Image (cartoon, rainbow, N blue to C red; front, side, top):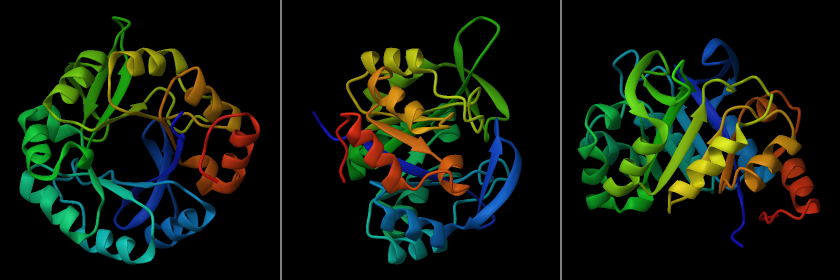
Amino acid sequence: MLAKRIIPCLDVKDGRVVKGINFLGLQDVGDAVELGRRYALEGADELVYLDISATLEGRKTFAELVARVGEAVNIPFTVGGGIRSLDDASRLLDAGADKITLNSAAIARPELIGEIAAKYGRQFVVVAIDAKTCPDGLWHATTHGGSRPSDKELFSWAKEAEERGAGEILFTSMDHDGTRNGYPCDSYAALSDTLAIPVIASGGAGSVADIAAVLTEGKADAALAASIFHYGQYTVAEVKRQLAEAGIPVRL
């Protein structure tokens, strides 16, 4: 069995890492480069940097920050936020990012997924889906930092993204984000069964037990977490040690 990945997520606004609940009430938690360096030293498998205000405010992710992160950490990292074109993706990959995530722009123009995958390979393309449950009982994807609903349903959109060239799907449950009440494991399991590419779980980690559940019951290939690391509840090393003790394969 492949090792499961533990990925700290760093939501970036104006160069600083922030965290909120259900995408609202953002609080400053530290310097983006310094936190990334710390998590890398603790044993994180990868990092994800999301410029959460880039799309909403019509800005591009700062290639300068990406370059600084690339100099500071020795593990793969993914960057997203405000990527609307092949040129945007190229700028970030050339600056040092190992992968890019697409969200709003992919929903607006799904062909972008294939354009980037054709040039760089699908392993460079992560499609991020910020979704919440709606009155019809289905998960619907949102855009612009979770502020606008779309007509895309989670499972069909994830499958389309895979077929267009996505190498991974990063599904964030907006209903659970920042609550530390656990992940919706049934939905992750269903998504993993639908796709042949890795699924990264995001939104709701409050304990190692939550992470263990989404990696086993939820069948996720990786768990993204923010609050439990940013606020010192756990170190990455502590999480991985406890997962290993529970019999879940991780890189120690």
